[in-house]
Length: 479
Image (cartoon, rainbow, N blue to C red; front, side):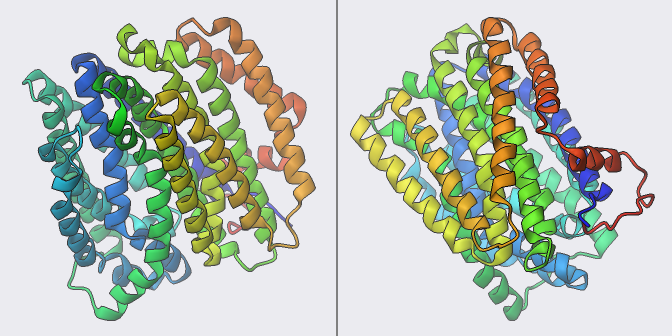
């Protein structure tokens, strides 16, 4: 009854492979920037980098998510939804630009003003790929994202070579996203006849009405991490911000893992919502989230010191606590992302919005009480992040009578045991290069999940289906 689809496995494999290639460029850029800039200027640049995702979510206003969901249900509406969002997004960008001088903080007005422009280019570019995502075709998006990272690396290296500093890096990021937007527009026009046109009022009203609650949840979810450096800026020294910024930048470098998982499962859960397989589908994506998130969390904490040295050099070693702690938080947010995506598919996105708003308020209060200490901020992220994951997972699954809590708990415990085994194996290697620790950890974890039964026959069938040629499956692709 529940047969795995090769298309879903291939989509995940394509995006994970593309993300691995992108990470080569991103890691090179991380090392280049960290070693070229001073500790204080790293803090300024990290503040800019952490604010850009928040601005992007605001400018998008949930319209991309609405477009993907509705196009997945009605493919003929691709041009109407994805081609009509540019004007309201441009207006939101203008509003953000007007507010930037009030938020300059340690980064400076000139640097942060570039942020909304990057956000608009990223939003428009991603909207071009909404029809592809709705159709389950992730190859074009993955390919162009690789070019985006490569172009960003090349332009950033040029900016640093010419002495551009943090401001030059921001301009390089903007140029790269503009080029990516152009690629997306050309590809979408060719394959889906998608054009940016003057939007009609009913479409804009629909996008904003359904997108605003999604955007509210996304804003608070993004703010949960984006608020770290602004909170530290109130009390911490530029040097302390520079140390913490290594962890913050590493977090944002890994964050596409959350977006990949959400992008692949969103069209699937949108189709499954209200059907007989809804509980089974949610259980499977929960399993995927903790199979990915638990080793990420454990490995990040154990190998935090050598990862910090590899990324930024020994001068940033005091920031290893942030690298390890925030990597663990990201592992928790893989679970939260799955639950949030399912709540959106159910039309219950306000649940996630309320939870994330309360979490942001709680973290702000903790930081005010702790007087801007980086260690306290990491601890708050871990504790509140765990509470978010529990609340959202329960909220997403509690309305489904066919969701097997016993099976989910058993799978979680087996994956957790495998992650503990991996952590014990990595502990003697905690001071060695990550080029040794990461492959060893991955091998031990894979062996442990197989031995402990964390990967079952359905999972293995999904992997086999992913390697079949498109069109060769005899199973129902909607499974």
